[in-house]
Length: 324
Image (cartoon, rainbow, N blue to C red; front, side, top):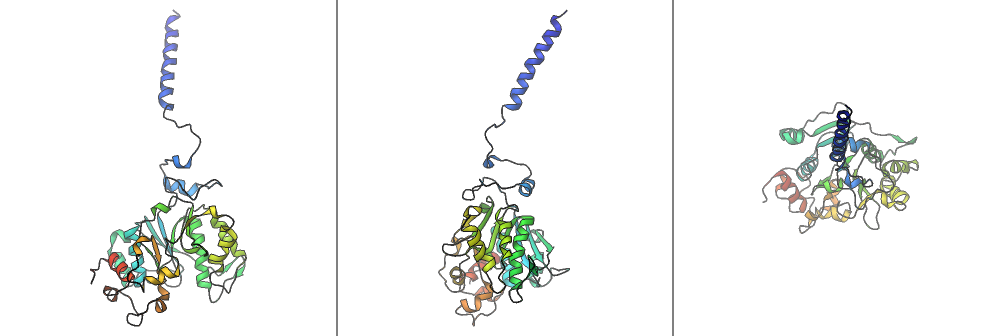
């Protein structure tokens, strides 16, 4: 009478051992490695991940930790010009983000005007556009922003706040994307920092929890009202990166931030622009960079057809305009 229950107990034990082996045989009990992560909800990981001092910004990780969102800031003016449109088309064609966030202080901003209408006709592009209201900062840490440089300083501050909120890829409105930026989305924070120069804040690629972002904002506690780029580039380089270069993945040259590179798109027909990932066009400075500015003072969909310098080729390519 006692054999039957013991047999059941023994069989149950055997089955339990087998099931335990099946369930746990595939579990990786190796020490935690970021590169081994295979998460289902990428967005959740991106938004909650906190970086540790051991994070290696030289090598990055195997997976994307920066959301595929491109941010533009448009203070006081929401109209798109020709260069704005070309830049948008280039980013879509060459990188293909999930979203474009346009941050503006223009209340009830409407996507109107010729170039916005062109965007609307491109359904795939238009479906990615989102407009976010954002006040133009007027002070930082109780210090009033410059009357003369306030618009630029406000943008410098806002891009850091935007990245702290969302993470993603910040681009100046005249940054032309040439290659996919996905390879940079595997780092905590990426900026262009050329040799013997200050960092360039025209392009910032960052996880929202990147350690450098709050430190960068804190450098504004010493705000120089009369200097254009002191807080935007000089002070964060000297106060942060000289001491802690490990906080960023350093790009040297490939974001086309150097003025000498920018000027070549308007002056050097032989420029090898395709080797770069991004070029900062410095569109507002073309009047003294382009030796033939007086011949073509306005660049648009008509004049670009025969514009002989690299920017002409770049624009024609993303707009699918036949070469002359």
